[in-house]
Amino acid sequence: MKIIDAHIHISEYINGFGSRGELIPLGDGIVKYADSKGFRIIPKGMGDKSFSIEKALEIMDEYEVQKAVILQGNYLGFQNYYAYKAMKESDRFISACTFDPYSINRDSISKNLFEDLWFKIIKLECSSGSGFAAIHPDLKLDSNEFRYIYDLTRKYKLVVVIDIGRPGSISYQIDALEKIVKEYKDVTFVICHLLAHQNNQIDLLKNNLPKFKLDNVYFDLASVINNTKEKYPFNEARKYVKEAIDILGSDKLMWATDMPAGIINNSYKDNIDFINDMDIDIDKKDKENIFFNTANKVYFKK
Image (cartoon, helix red, strand yellow):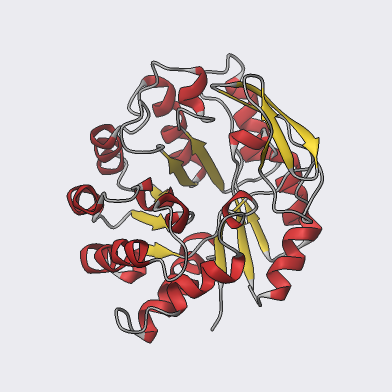
């Protein structure tokens, strides 16, 4: 079965920043924030102080993954030019760029990203841990600053990938997001992590997902098995996916790993088996949609 990994990260060098200050690499895939002890962000043996283009391709080859979508994660630091380099080196990648919508020079930044480098995807990492809400705690997803970006997506015909963090956080603005995706119905939105529901939150998932049953909205499944804090066979995470198929349809869902950090607690193979072994709950067409068809349509259409 053909596979696209719809949510990965690469880093030429780690230089992140978030609510806990700067994120610096210590080596062997270990990093630390300004207020913390070291913790692992890259699986052991997969990178010292970076997660390279070459390593991503090596893992994709091992598991016969045809393509991948490189997204920006603020915890690694903005990696726009390295992501651009990945697209130029291999047609198996398509990459998203990002920038802070509060930037004073946002006009010149966006012109460079969308007219000079021709990015076709923008990633909005809005979470309160290491996203825009970490440095803009008054962030509103329907503010003028964010409308500036949504208007750019119309101008340049971009796909918007958005991560609003976890339920209960200041960035988890479901009502504002619903308002925006309905207002900008001519723009394609991909919402990360199936809205990042944690363990024992299936009722919240059932309440939230129907709000986004819209022609212009899709979801990736990155880190669903990590958010539910499970090991194989990932029973709760599978319930979440089955519920999402029932509410939205499998043609709205994309398989993804969130590597490198997303494959620390559960391996790349675990992420594949998570969906592949759902034979009781989903059929072959569902798997084809989730593993390949949806992401291919959203990201790799000509």
